[in-house]
Length: 227
Image (cartoon, rainbow, N blue to C red; front, side, top):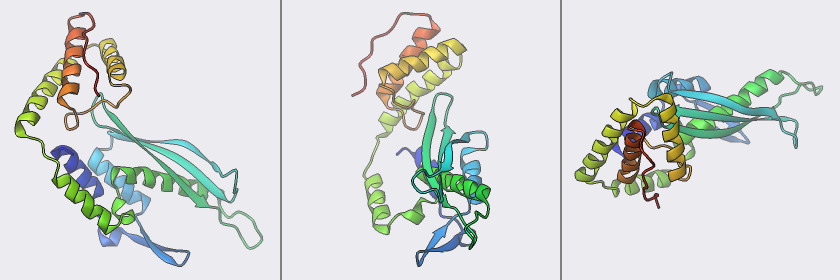
């Protein structure tokens, strides 16, 4: 993980203050959770209010057990002009009834399921993830990240190519940018477009070459696809 990516992840996964955390008893076990308002606030602060969005893919009563509402939420982070990172979350809420069997407030259960799904999607970005992980797993991850080393020379060369690509891509027309996205999708077999923190030298070279071709209306340049 690059320094900038690590910094972003650290901000997202930072533990919430004790006073923001809440507890609930489920099945005799006390569980700690973060209110949805604090999760949204974390995403707004770290990503930026105009850099992420939430889409409700579905929300309905469970066809198997109609006493549950199930929601599917998708969170998208617009990292760069060419890069969107997406995470999905599935959440649920049990419908509350009176002693006579009448539903108390179905609307609240739909909102609860959507909130739960949003939390799960945000958790995939790191928000509140520490509440669901064991100490052993966190320690192993820290050791693995410490062993990953990129030489300054490698980082410098890749960054130079990427910066040249970004400068050139800003001059492309809307149609040329669309051609660039199509070329990338074909070359990378549908991989997500990288950003300056995740791009490899091979990827940066391809993007720069394609941007140059489009800029000068040249013919297709043959590149070796990523392995």
